[in-house]
Structures are given as C-alpha cells and as structure tokens.
Length: 227
Image 1 (spheres, one colour):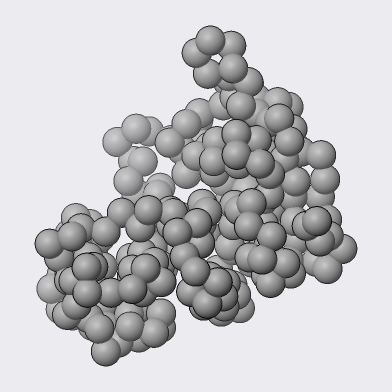
Image 2 (cartoon, rainbow, N blue to C red; image 1 turned 60 degrees about the vertical axis):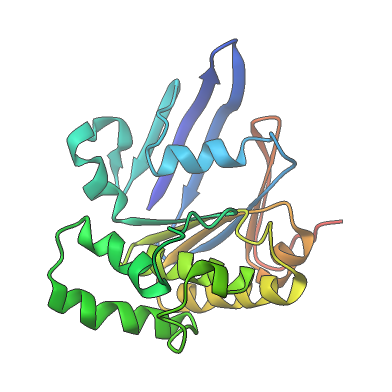
C-alpha cells in the first residue's frame, strides 16, 4: 500500500530529516514508528499524506508516486488517509456531531448521508451518547475519539496517528490503543508514530525504529520491546 524507495527529505539549511529510507507497508498492517523527537517520524508521515514531497527518491501509494498527484486533486487523495494528531484539532464552537459532520460537508456530502453516517461513526468510537457535547464538555480522551471519528468518516484506507496519546493519561491512552486495534481488525491500515513505550508495547505490532532520519530497525510483532 505504501512504499518508500530511497527517500530523502532535506529542509532549508541542509537539514536532513530523512536519509535514504526504504520501507514497505502492506494493506491491512498495523505499524508503529518509534524514535526520539526529531528522529524523522512526523516527516515520514507527512510524505505519506503528501503534505511534503521527497527531495530524493519516490513515495508510492497503491503503486502510484505521490509526486504525480495534481495539486487540485490533493483533497481527494487525502480522503484515502485519515489523520489524527496530538492536539486533536477540533473546532471549539461545534459539537462532537458537528465536528465530524463538517468533514463531510466540505466534501459536499448530502445531509441525508451525514445524518446516517455521523451517528454510526460516533457509536463506533464510543461517543454515541455524547454527540451534542462541545469539546470543552469532553475529557481529553473523548476529544481524541472525536478526532478518530472525524478521521474515519470518509472510510479511509489508512489511519495515520502522530503521537495520538501525547496529551492523555494512561487510561485514556489504553482506550485509544484499543480503538486503533479495533479499526485495524476491521481491515484499515494503521500507522502509529509514537515515542510512548506504553502505547507501542500495548499495540504489540510491527515496529519500525528511526534514528537521525534513518531506519535502524524493523521488527515483527512481538519481537521488539522498548526499553
């Protein structure tokens, strides 16, 4: 599904965020990407959802290079990829329902479809009874679950989670890990970037280790434990 072929990313000032990365992620996999802050995790994710383009090499999504995507078609491309971040990025003056519905409204989805799909997604993430709550009325873990619902609403092929538990307590973190595992069991590819030992160990899936922009380890499920 995703392939990096000798990919390097160099920013202004000759800062190399990624160096000659080769990586394949198959359809339906759950992959944890670990490394210290600044190791290159976020840059790798940005290359997948085409917020950035490689300086050298090629990133492929389902066999096609991301560099060939027409800029006008980027929003359509990104509907294949649901993204979740540490800071939730919720609209504070919209309810949980409205936050998720907004992602469909900007895609010109009909009101009838929105009314059918949004409650179903919120039910899946365990917020069926809190659809009319505003972000300030929800716990941090619940706010993150709204973010997951919004990411799932287009039925993406991949979920990318960049430090999704960074602002959460251990109980909420465990709930988010369980949610990601359930999403993966339903057939969605999950790519998790984290430096949280607890989260990666609990996921217990394939682990890719990045250090100074290079992949230094690629471990099968259960073969790697963070120290």
